[in-house]
Image (tube, rainbow, N blue to C red):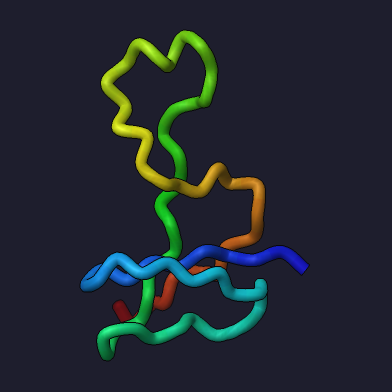
Length: 69
């Protein structure tokens, strides 16, 4: 099975979790899934001011957002 990478908004810790498992807790809060990538990785994009931060390229399944938030 594939993993979903979650990151802590407080301390920045990243944790891969198997798809279908509950969202992990860190620093007494639910962790957040990595954001979707907003730019493609190619030679033309190398000239942009993209910081190259970790992101999710959308190739894996993501849990539906919790309507309570």
